[in-house]
Length: 398
Image (spheres, rainbow, N blue to C red):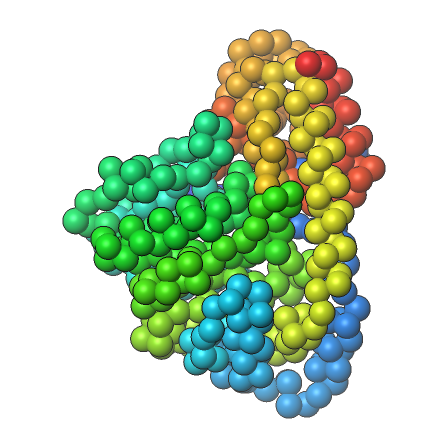
């Protein structure tokens, strides 16, 4: 008997964290590994944010417990930032500050989902969503999408998956892992469907600033204001401001949901680090110059990666319009000799590539999409090209 609860035993390890850990372990052992796994900007956190945190660390008032839902100044700043960036007006009391966007996802799902509830989840999906739904006792209902739709779900597909037990839709645009971005019209159509069906929506807006080309970000409760009373927004500073290690996110929702989230957080973590919260006030209240600079770099890398992946034998990749991932089909590389191996799945191909070429990526099985792979272009230009050149050397040029 292990003593570990069944719900934890049945939970899969985060694939993105696992592949990143394997790449780091190989580097520590002296191997030259280039990782396309974690969605983590390679830039340092902008200096004004760091300076604000330094000042907070020297302030004795910041050495004490603070309110569980977040510093009042940060909740006010998040509300102001939300109005500035997406046009959605909320009260500070509708904001709870969480330990990263990931805790916002966890808290939001646990506040909304009861055992037996069904949660609609377009696939490919971020690895954490179904894991948290299962922990809450809900049932994930994946809705498969593919390249033909640009990896975007339609209202007809949502309607086909709907049952009287449907409680929640998890909606993400821009998308991790696919880079899909829904148009304002598509967002509005989905929002109106949710209102008509009485379905709650948890919308993850963590990549709101990372859109490219002619794509633009649209927020569900802005496009469909009547959805506001049944919508929860999750966001944070990790991706936009290169603050993954600071662990600050937030959840926005109706007052009674935020009250429930505050109760949960009061028992789970209490307040988020005051030092990190102070840095976040500077981030969301400051100018977006550094954000634009990073986005320009990601856009350049997006073009390079998209081209080089499509120049690699067995790989086919549509152009991503948001976030910082290419989601590529690797089915053409399966079932044939790769180095001294014969991979039959994307999972097996990932092991072959990291072992034989020193290239790490996340196989599509982690995202509910066998035969695909996610490559992050949130890494330096030189490493990006070097790793993809190695991949072409192993798989061959198209």
